[in-house]
Length: 268
Length: 258
Ligand SMILES: Nc1ncnc2c1ncn2[C@@H]1O[C@H](COP(=O)(O)OP(=O)(O)O)[C@@H](O)[C@H]1O
Ligand SMILES: Nc1ncnc2c1ncn2[C@@H]1O[C@H](COP(=O)(O)OP(=O)(O)O)[C@@H](O)[C@H]1O
Ligand SMILES: [Mg+2]
Ligand SMILES: [Mg+2]
Image 1 (cartoon, rainbow over the protein chains, first blue to last red):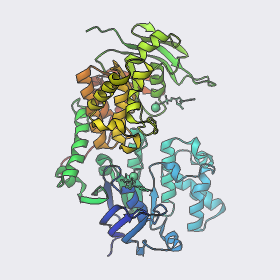
Image 2 (cartoon, rainbow over the protein chains, first blue to last red):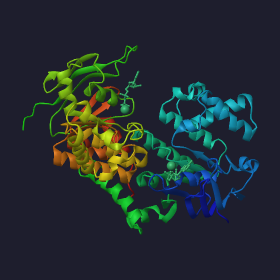
Image 3 (cartoon, rainbow over the protein chains, first blue to last red):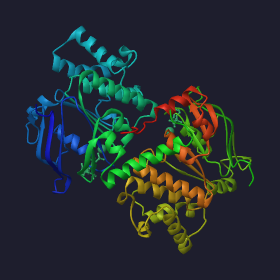
């Protein structure tokens, strides 16, 4: 069976022709959990945007990106609309990116549910409450009536996750979804993502600069630097025995931070 | 080595204008030279509010802030000048905190001008030394903030804060906007400044590994109250409060073995 996402020789250029991502090739099988890791500016976000045909105006992609059987590069808006949501959905670092500040949270979640599943009225309200419960938001009725600014950062990110999951995407893309959150909230969110995707055999492309975070929810990692793939492999293997100097530096930094904590026996 | 505190919060509470409830309540903390202090806790716990009081940017609703044993009087210009010379700060966002229209030379030299410490060639020398100390190339002085990465900008902010050789550096989440690799480098830099210049750091952070690497003392804040404080070794090594334990167990860890 072919992969859910097949990226071949992806190159992303600015309007002036400068390459920001160069010759990137990777794939994600159905149900597979892939981490994209690298320092800021390495091209992780642009890569995820290219997968959904969401590159900023003026930027162009070449090569091939096939998502759930659909070629994304050069596709019409109509084709893209058909694959977004069901083929893949994205959660961004800043949840307000995905949320309309002037619309109650319940209505924002209702919209994709109505469109995809054709439910209305009481059935739609029930579906909204279920969507909020699924991301473990307490008191979903109250949350549904709230505006985004009335929620905490962690609650907003759960709402954004609920919206991404509303159409049961085959691939969940998460671009640094916990970077702006407190550590305790981050830990809960990672748990939640991990549980939800396992329950549904959903594939994940999880982006972060933090190897320890990526390792929490993925099995395989792709290391990026300056728009290129540096190496990829099983996350445990990469952490244990990085092959490239760049990856080794990433692992060493993460270890150095951990060792300060461990020197106090602060580990569990 | 004296052990009298440089900065002290004595049972301070703070309520924002127009609100009854204090966001921090009855907090007493002391900052002693050579004993760097971490303030940890969830967002909204009141860490920045405490830092603002320590900086003299907010006046406690009740209680007292003391500097070298004297109550901090925001109107006392002579005391404030001594205070600013001794206590400097760095903020979380290295993009927002540096004026994009000014050359790095001018940004880093600002405290020298406003505190009338040095001007002209003498100021230039001090700026050069501060930049060198934070590991930036000498030609950085002629460039503008946008030409630097996030980690380098944080170095510029640290150079500005340390150009007048303060005794205390207050830092609000100084590395949380940075990549893990950059974070480690900035932590190393702060550790080196502690070592070589005797700087004492008061740091707000929710990254416990950074706290463990830099601060001898830790105070844990939950909803405006200190729930646990003491030597970092014991607070993080043998936490007695449930909230501290939860913070510790939330730290994402590398997978072990292979
Ligand atoms: N809209 C844009 N216009 C020009 N350059 C951009 C734009 N967005 C991103 N870039 C550049 O592309 C590179 C990769 O960016 P990005 O994919 O956001 O990296 P990451 O997510 O790994 O931090 C960076 O050098 C960045 O400055
Ligand atoms: N300017 C302000 N006006 C009113 N309330 C504020 C203001 N700034 C902060 N607060 C409130 O004070 C509390 C503590 O905030 P803060 O000190 O910024 O916490 P932290 O830095 O730990 O995240 C929060 O509940 C916050 O909403
Ligand atoms: Mg990014
Ligand atoms: Mg704060």
